[in-house]
Image 1: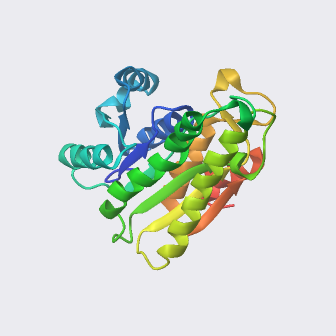
Image 2: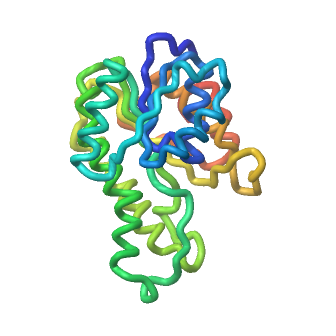
Length: 243
């Protein structure tokens, strides 16, 4: 992929999944923007990507978890970058195991929903207008298999939040069937980890990044759920941009 001329906003780009995507896109020549509430995480991301690519990485401190914050972040992105060609939404945390529902508070549920579902909505509402009318643009959600089942005892709220994010992606595809830009969902039905933390049932976040780069390059599908169920699926994605 030649990323020259592509400007990609990676929401959640300072996280495990997002950082792999950011690194792959930078190495392909894209300009990449990342927003985080935590300046320290942005500095860590800068040190993670190759030094030769850092001039194409734009980091902004902001909060996309509220409508006002997301709108302010959008204005900052447009001011810093001008036109955005692609958006990748990789929001949320990788794990939550607070206990069975009867031991949790409403505040705990709100926290999970804020992180996994509500921020997906507020950021989409702010940033989707930047790309929706461009047939050469894309908006790709990254979700996971936690929404389909209880992964293990104590993870119930993770399932609720993840299921909400998956449902939101579905309604976006179906409510906007004719929007010109490519709208897709990459659904990772396995764990994602950094190389030093790889375990059975997990894939390397760098490989996820390579797969996302190919999806954005080839634009083979739109309004599609791209399911990654096995490492072999991920390898196919890296080559073909679809499974």
